Image (cartoon, rainbow, N blue to C red; front, side, top):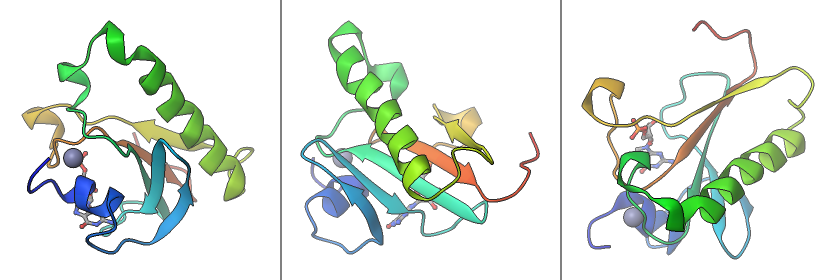
Length: 111
Ligand code: 5GP
Ligand code: ZN
């Protein structure tokens, strides 16, 4: 999709600190981290936020969550814990329309 920052990161048109990649998903560090560890997990194809998805997307959504679990294991926070967040819409402060999952970890997180 034109002008989507996360599509550009997925296509390697703009740089990001990538920590994991497979055919379907990319995992990279958030540019403005809100916790000691803050990763973003995206599908490489452009999909809208959770509010725009339907049953046809359920396999990809499941894969996205499992990719976050794998990233958590790779960075060694499976036991200490982590938070997975989908921001959806204005009141959640969503900035980027490309579907993405936040992984926050590295300290006890305030709710
Ligand atoms: P949202 O509020 O849409 O759920 O979160 C978007 C996240 O993407 C924010 O935490 C923001 O810091 C991060 N972000 C925005 N632009 C870039 C970028 O160009 N590179 C990286 N690595 N992260 C970005
Ligand atoms: Zn996109």
